[in-house]
Length: 262
Ligand SMILES: Nc1ncnc2c1ncn2[C@@H]1O[C@H](COP(=O)(O)OP(=O)(O)OP(=O)(O)O)[C@@H](O)[C@H]1O
Ligand SMILES: [Mg+2]
Image 1: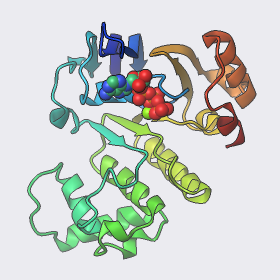
Image 2 (image 1 turned 120 degrees about the vertical axis):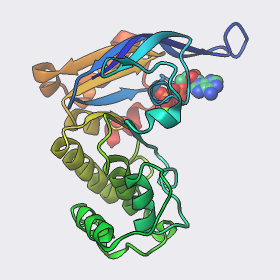
Image 3 (image 1 turned 90 degrees about the vertical axis):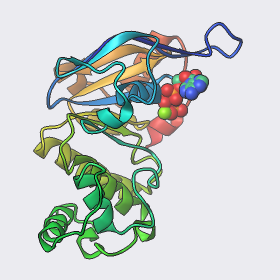
């Protein structure tokens, strides 16, 4: 279980450049819970992930993972239990190394890369074939030669080959063409559900936000302004979310159109 208690992060406090990152935010993510996160540009979504992943330290509040206080734990230690994917397909992989080498690094949690055994290769091939993206035939190809969709699918596999306690997906399909994006979302659902992972997924696509997972939260100025699940979520529509955002935050979404058209 991941628990955030009264987390606050203000950038450049008491200066003209002061920006609210996260503002007294509390959130509990139960084991196996898949939460989608929406909110306009600058609402704090990536900051929230940076705080959970440890690349930022909060000004106040605490973060607990399975009961352990990890608020000040270094990111390299947290990365064993917190997997993360970014919007940029280049971000999660080493482009000059082969698919097999990337997977071996991930499987060994960044440990020293020794020779990749025949059984390792068999294991990788079998895992990759489940993605149905033709990656099982690319074991010896440098990752830089893969398509964006293949890279994100591989990044997902790398982030989950040792199942993390929490998986953070920061708009991981936003840079892909629509059909690759849809495919990567399908794989995401499959991996998260079959491994019963706790997952937080940021998306600008409200339809995806309602379709994926079982709970949706909306951020505005570093605060959770909506948290829906169950029947309420099942009955929600994209336009009802947009309306909710307008009425709760008192402003328009920066990219209403983008979200509605997606
Ligand atoms: N390292 C930083 N230094 C200063 N301000 C920052 C930093 N990171 C984020 N911010 C500010 O904090 C606020 C939240 O930013 P954040 O990147 O978390 O938003 P976001 O919801 O991820 O937006 P987007 O949808 O554009 O990705 C913004 O006002 C942003 O300018
Ligand atoms: Mg962001």
